[in-house]
Image (cartoon, rainbow over all chains, first blue to last red):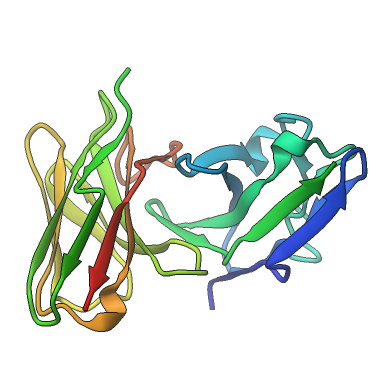
Amino acid sequence: AQRVTQPEKLLSVFKGAPVELKCNYSYSGSPELFWYVQYSRQRLQLLLRHISRESIKGFTADLNKGETSFHLKKPFAQEEDSAMYYCALRVGTYKYIFGTGTRLKVLA
Amino acid sequence: ETGVTQSPTHLIKTRGQQVTLRCSSQSGHNTVSWYQQALGQGPQFIFQYYREEENGRGNFPPRFSGLQFPNYSSELNVNALELDDSALYLCASSLGGVTSGNTIYFGEGSWLTVV
């Protein structure tokens, strides 16, 4: 079965604390994984993709095929990171499977 | 560069009615996907259109149908509306087709409430 699991609906951290948003996937093929973010009153937008191996806004995510995970990390949370985060798996050439999302709240 | 635009932003329909939602792709994009996002859930893939042809479909019944026009804009039609169809409907566009995994860009969505 093709599935993306984000176990936490809400994650609250204090400003300056490390953040880790968990994502696990189930897929028999070669996975291509993404993190999308939705800030308040804004549209869903791409944050990063695993094939780029980039750091965006201080966030990184490493694909771990052994653990079938793609956790999103940031060493020091900022208040402006507060948003809804979705992990997504691209299946085939056209379909994305999204997790249910994690709301990150960064407290002052 | 013009982003993905959707209309209407909100609408209310009665069970059994039909609805049409519209989407204008980002400039230059020839591929459009539609997603349904129920409250508290992530977006779920409905279908994708590439150069006016449906080239992928998720687990949605045939009463969900779509069109893509020569200018790459798109419509999502839902017939015989049910209460569970109440959701945010997202349109996403990208450049490329069946062999491409290019980034998809989302619109702000159309909120549909079925009463």
